Image 1 (cartoon, rainbow, N blue to C red):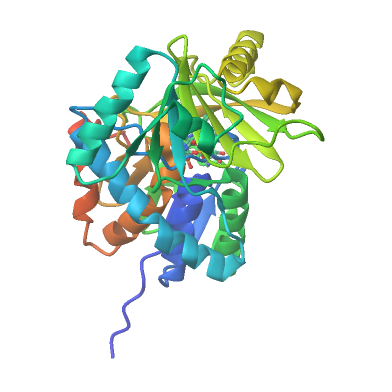
Image 2: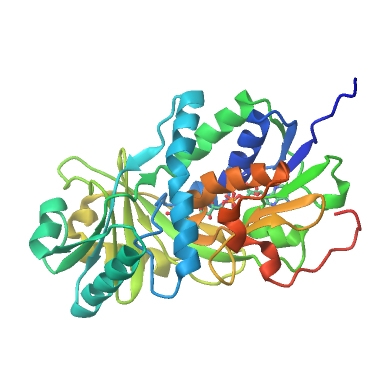
Length: 364
Ligand SMILES: Cc1cc2nc3c(=O)[nH]c(=O)nc-3n(C[C@H](O)[C@H](O)[C@H](O)COP(=O)(O)OP(=O)(O)OC[C@H]3O[C@@H](n4cnc5c(N)ncnc54)[C@H](O)[C@@H]3O)c2cc1C
């Protein structure tokens, strides 16, 4: 009798993407080693946790919407499976409300509702009274809203912690060695999931760091309660969002090109707080518990890089602003790719849509 050995897998990078991939691959019976000197310390620890592809829809961005909707659809099964293994429920909200303060923003909300609605996803327009009935803490200047009842949010840190537990229970070997060169790895297959640093291991890969600063605000006795759902808006043209937590809210986020710099700037914190108070005036009563910054692994077209780079290497990176949203689908896609049957849902994320160099070292 001939026994067929399962291919061994190296996952490089233990953020939400690498952890989700390592967990699902090990669960499916593959021997998996996860390489990361600082598991869970990257953008995944910093993030907000919105799963909001519909509210972010915009005419012309059909591929991004379809991809995001597929990513959202894979979440319930993923979350159920993770809860069954770890006992952890990662959800912190079930819906998302985007608000408008002026006529131009209100018109944009109608554009999004119509365009996304035509593609089969329901978004509801609310008037001033409707918005305030849902979120009484919002400023009186808020004049309209867009409610996405199918867009939940997760606690990113609870997710990372649960995935670490799931990975351990599935028998993944965690190796704290930083990977300097993929050719040095001995496994049969390599999944490149090093977030914003991925191009250091595959030069020319179309992923770059996009800095984001974010605050964690803790509710204090006497302060108004945190919003019951994700609240998003725009102040002075800058996007701002509140994601509920058990003890308060996460308030995000700035977005600008700054290389791998993750220092928190005074100007970033000032803008976030000023913009937040414009939408939810009572937020000033909260405790400023934490200010942090991370590097989003961004691509030129806001779709990730998912698929084969070579016979041995699979890219699972470039998740940009949506790595929490896309983690469930990415894990399924990589598992399918490892099994030799790529998922059609992720075809738009093929890394070969950008020019790819083959780094020296041959067998990668
Ligand atoms: C401020 C902010 C807010 C965000 N909000 C949201 C949100 O609301 N919703 C959403 O969906 N997404 C959000 N994101 C995006 C999301 O956080 C990222 O897309 C996601 O975390 C990317 O996960 P990752 O595993 O690819 O990268 P990371 O979490 O950065 O993990 C990469 C890992 O690779 C490891 N690594 C790097 N180099 C090597 C090496 N050479 N060898 C071994 N290991 C290596 C690192 O140590 C790290 O642990 C936000 C991001 C930021 C910064």
